Amino acid sequence: MLASFGVTGGEKQTFRDEDWYGDELGAAVFTECAFHGVDLSEVITAGARFDRCVFHNCRFNGSVHKATAFVACDFRRTNFFGATFDGCKLDGSVFTECTLRPLTVSGGRWHGVTIRGSNLTKLDLSGVDLREADLSMSVLAGANLRDANLGGAALSGTDLAEADLRGATLGGADLTAAKLRATRLDLAGAVYLAELHGAEVDAG
Image (cartoon, rainbow, N blue to C red; front, side, top):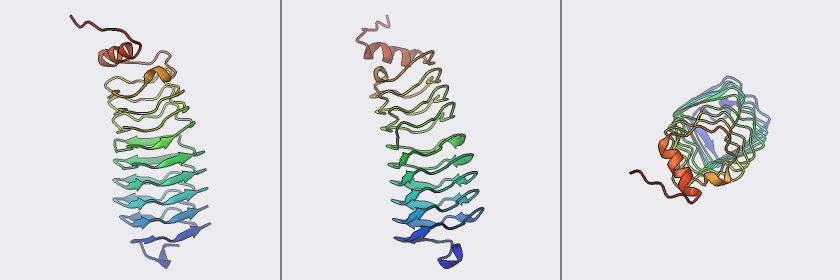
């Protein structure tokens, strides 16, 4: 439990099969720590930082994170059912075999995250900075990506059926490698897609 090291966090420590259910971590800082089988359900963080941490077989169910940073973290077989990320930074983090829905995301920077082959159906990721994210083979059917920044994102095999991309920044994202069906685009997005297919768009 937290009493062993206080709410300030830890460095290069390993936490295994611990129960932190409902703990308030506040602005704790964890650096290069490993969490194995830790129950972080309904944990609350505000301004916390997890730097290059590993989370394997953990539970974040119902947890709430505000302005918290998970930088270059490795999440594997971890459950985020009902979790909330409000203005959080997840730059360079990798999610493998994780449960990521339902999930509430309000803004934030997810620059360079890797979420391959995941079910992200109908997630609301509007306004999220997903520059250079690897979303290959993931299912984003019906997702709300309005005003998101998908610049340079990897979308090979990504299912964007009925997703809303209006207002999204798409430069450098290869939509031709994605699965598009009834995908909603604004004029700028439609022009960009046409150009990717070799069309010459004449605005005049």
